[in-house]
Image (cartoon, rainbow, N blue to C red; front, side, top):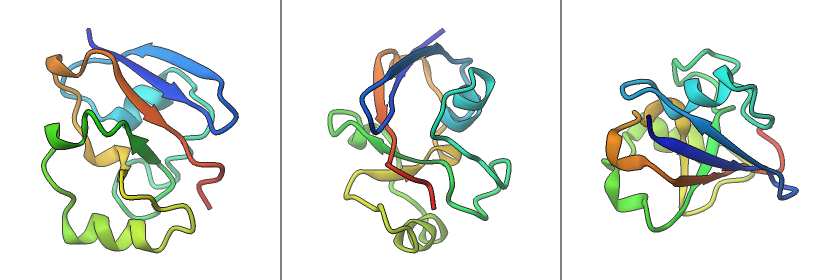
Length: 106
């Protein structure tokens, strides 16, 4: 199982094992990672699962859809490496990926 390292805004790290095929958001929720709200349950309707993907991993994902980009642009914490973690599917090659979390999801 790939390991994902979530880093809270304050620096606390949470290393979790994720199942291949689940979303990064689902892995965070299953392991009670603080900072991922996932209010809509992963339907890309709220934007409360935003994470900053470590730049070494950005090119491993397809680009965000127009809907994801619009949701991210509505966030006050958007960065160039922002993604909605509900839209990123865990793959075997992702072992060790780092996802930093914003100060707030709202």
